[in-house]
Image (cartoon, rainbow, N blue to C red; front, side, top):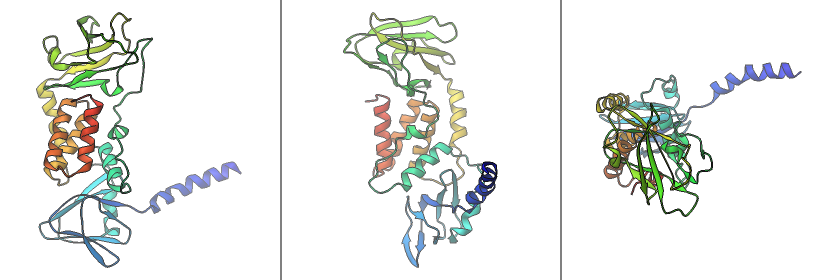
Length: 299
């Protein structure tokens, strides 16, 4: 009987999925774009949800970019009236140039109930390591700092302490040989990458950690890669490509998310900052930027 029930569920599940209705939310809009629902026409704006009985009207010279069921993005840039039924084929495939994690994050933020707190972007990033605490050391380093790809600028390498210690020892290691390249005593709970520039070289990889002064070495070592500018530019150009129209603020915010997801923290900071300056009224941009600075101890 159990076998028959299992076969029934397996056979029936695909039809359940295929019968599921597609959902759409407006990601970006420019020009004359409106949504018609129950014969009532309203101006489309970012976050507008298209329900099953809705249609979207695109005026001449206008466009709207829609998100479909979290991980598919497409644009409507030809004048006309589009029903949700006519858009279902646009949800097929998975060849978008946009990060799927980014689209999940935006989908969640745009479709949440009014007044609901923003979901922290780290929940949607696959690059954050597991929480760990090496040995008996009384210093904890956030898993967000497991890997840092450094190009230029500055970013603090920070930690927290379980005690009220006043002095800490920071150590920098060559990743290949594990030799200690730099050891310094500090009273603050961070060392800025700018302070390490005389000890590191472009193209090489390093490990770093921190411990309370006088305690055993911290086994929890983090990775620092001093990236060549050319390698970064190649990566940047590859993720800059976008198959849907967006404003400069939207592009900057998207790039900030993807750069952070790929450990380019200093560059992510610049893009989040630019997005908030270009669209200061956008609460999602402001919240994300404030949360980002808090996470990485950036003042």
